[in-house]
Image (cartoon, rainbow, N blue to C red):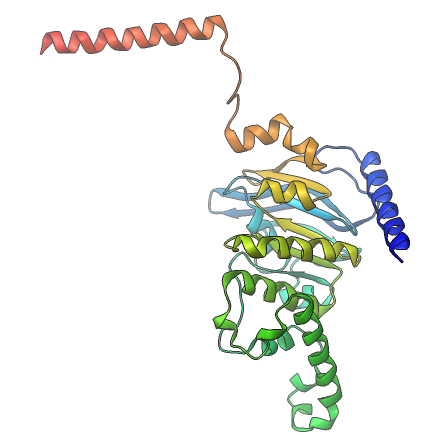
Length: 314
């Protein structure tokens, strides 16, 4: 069994490497099997253009990181794609079907779910009840059938069994009957990720999954994100921790000032001058030429002379 598992992992690695070798490492590059395709999406707030994405394709079955400095438009972009905000223009498709302007709950039903930077657990419900709410198409939610328990009892039992299985996988089964509000920040992140899986999604979008998480839980969360890929799901996540990005991402997309400035494997993107400029500013480490040194020295001397003249006049 171990040999089979190792062979499967090696095959997966070869497949991932082969498609990346074929893809051009430029913003908006075409992917061989994209699950999500975005075209011409723009979001303006007054005169501020928060998002201006020409073209993005997310490869199916891999982990893609969306990185960029604060204010780059990453979360706004997430909100647009999942229906929590509406663009001024543009469209996007999931599995070949247009989902531009589709309501968040309908986006989730189609298999694309998200988590939030600030967790959205329902504090006054138990952990198990939070999990049950994540399931879709529950017969008991209908006003007419709600009065006839035999119509939905079996489905609710199946949903509860699925919820308990996921809680056990995320090591939250001991907290099943606790109020969600009693969980730590890291445990709430785990709960939100587990609840997202109740939909049985094809694509999971994580907005800063490590933000505010105790270091003791970080490795657990990392393991769960990797496990999503192992199960055949596509992952798109926003993150500022570059060590995490290097560890788990197959592909990286970089945003700066609302636009995509780079794409590629983590090791190539981290060395890309456009990415370094986006985080640290243009020419942050460019060596000074002799002319630059002379100009700076002359400017400093002129400033000192001016100060001495002012002091003499006083």
